[in-house]
Image (cartoon, rainbow, N blue to C red; front, side):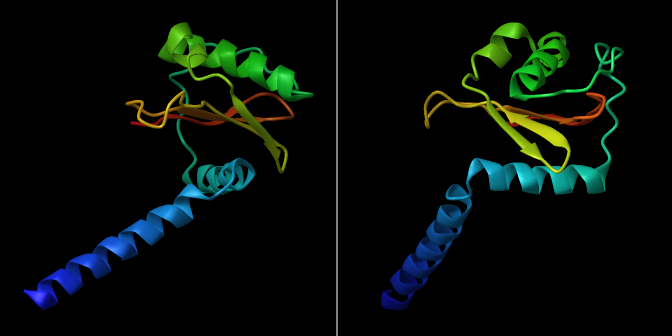
Length: 129
């Protein structure tokens, strides 16, 4: 019984420490990780209808406008706007935008999108569970 308790607490503390490491990754680092992953995976985004006008994205405001223009028809305006404030990062020539959860206990995930600065083409779109 004693050995069982020791094993249980060892596993519990190990999983807790792993979750804590993930929890403390800042937004910029998460954006860098997502960009590298997206470059390797090359997602098919042909399902997006609103990406015909390809224009440069000069700043974070333009990135948000482009993101909303693309994601509102895909996931719904209310769903995307409910994830404000948006987290916007410029990483290696790409704009990486994530939604935010209002509360820690809120169900469901958040969107993420990666757009090329040069022409606003989509590298990746996702919506967490």
